[in-house]
Length: 375
Image (tube, rainbow, N blue to C red; front, side, top):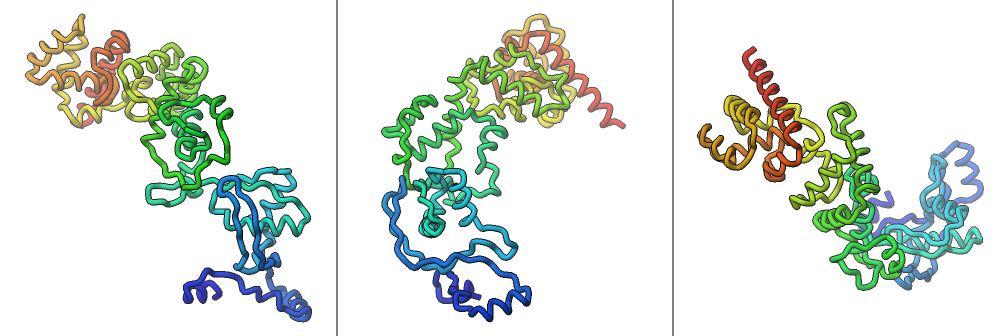
C-alpha cells in the first residue's frame, strides 16, 4: 500500500517507520499470534559524508525509512550480509557497481552501529547495452565465463577492452595492446571514468584479433584450441585432426589469408569447424547445386593429377558453368563453407591426400542422398 500511495503522489516509495511506534503490549500480542516479522535497522535521519575513489566527495541523507536487515523468512538482506561478510573477511576496499552508490550511507550507519571502521568505497561504472540497459544476471554476456569459456576471447583482449572503455590508465593508447605487466604498472583506480560503459562488439573483436596475433602459439593458443575442439565435438573425436602441428598450420593459414580470428570459438563454429572436421551432410551443397552437376565435377577433380588454374578453367568449359561455380563446389566439398581462403590455398593447405578424402566423402554422401530421395 505504501508503494501504491507513493506512486500516486509521484514520490519515491519509502517505509513510514510504523513499527517504531508499537508498544510492548502490541509487540507481545503479535508474537503470541505467531505473526511473521522482519528485523529493521533504526536509521538516523542525518547527513552522511564519505569519499568514493571514483565519484569523489559525496553527501547523502537517508530519507527512505528503516530498512530491512532480516526478512520474514529469517534470511538476511544484502545490506546486512555484505557489511558483516566484508568485515569478517577484513575487506579494505569495497568494489562494486555504481547502482549501490545510493546505499553507502545506510551501510556506513551499519558499520558505525557495529563499532567497525568503514572500508574504502569504489563504485564502478556499469556495462550497458546500446539501449542504456544494464547487463543483468539473466544475460549470458554479463559473466566472465561467457567471454572466456563460451567465446574464447583471450584474457588480455577483454582487459584491454575494459580499460579502453572504462579507462583507469592515463593517456590510454587505444591503438596498442597493453601487456598485463604494463596495465598493472599504469593502472590507477582513481582514473576510472564515471560514465557507464556501452558494449561495443566491434571494438572487443578488434582487441581479440590483436591478442591472438600477439599470443604465444605453442604455450597459449594450440593447447586451448585442442581442449576446445575435444569439448565441442566429443562424439567426433576420432574424426578430428588434433595433431598440434596441424593446429599451428590452421592458425598460420588464418594469418596468411588475413582471416580475422578474434575469439577461439570461431574455429569450432559452423564457418570454420570443417578445418578440423569433415562435413557430415551434403545439405549446403545441394541448396546451391544439383547433385548431378556436383557429382560430375567432383569425379573429374578426383581423377585429375594436377589441380591448377588451367585445369579449373578447362573444367568450367567442359561442364558449361563459370569458374566461380567450380571453385564454390570445391570449397563446399572441402570445408562446407562458401567463404574462406582461395581454393588453391586450400589445396596446398590440406594436401592432396586429405582433399581426395573429403571429395570422396562428399560423393558418397551425394550417392546416399540420391538413394534416400528415390525410396
